Image 1 (cartoon, one colour):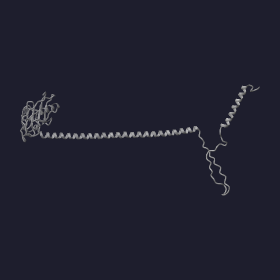
Image 2 (cartoon, one colour):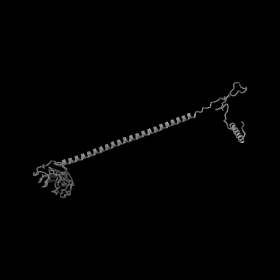
Image 3 (cartoon, helix red, strand yellow):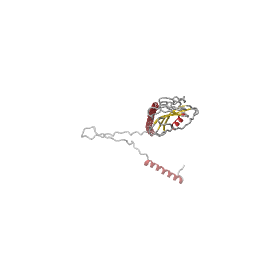
Image 4 (cartoon, helix red, strand yellow):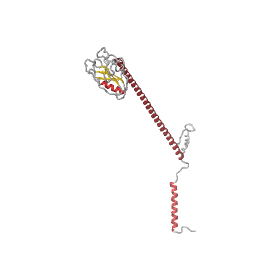
Length: 294
């Protein structure tokens, strides 16, 4: 069998041979570069010195110590170590963040506890101050009531029998006049049931005020169907006007609110003649004997 008979076969053989030659040349030119034995790593160290004495031939240099190259760890192991280091850093970072968070929570809890304690202390202080103020106010009110009681007790020496309005010896309350002997200062305080002037009228209103004559007054009806005697302590100025009226003092038989209010109005409506010689504030009384339906 014959080959390369045609022109095309001869050209193909030439091209094939040329390509093979080029590939062989490339293998020699750009092929792998290596040394046999392989190149050493590390640094050669000459420790110097010789086995012979001085002056002789120089000792043969010590052979360089061969240092083993560091073994390159596999890439997978390096990745695992890197991942472990990263995980450790993440754990440390997480621990730090948790520690910071716990510290913040503790500080916040301490602030809240301090705020609650301060609020409780403030509340206790306010309650204590309120109790002290109330105690002071109660003491002042008690003293005022005691002073009023002492003044009334000093002015009023007895209680008249208002249940017998026909008795001419009564000191004012009732439907008829009742006069008591006046003694001492002509303008001295009038006492309900004691010495001094006492006058009554048909409306059951009596009064006592030494040295000031007979007054005028108005009548105010009660709003309830109650009966009983109400005594009003009054203070009269020199012009004859009642400047203060205190209903329900000693001698009162009925302290119903619906009787005290009109009794005070009746007492305040009293008017005496002006007297420049009278005391600046003269003390007396007005008694009102209310009846049922009146």
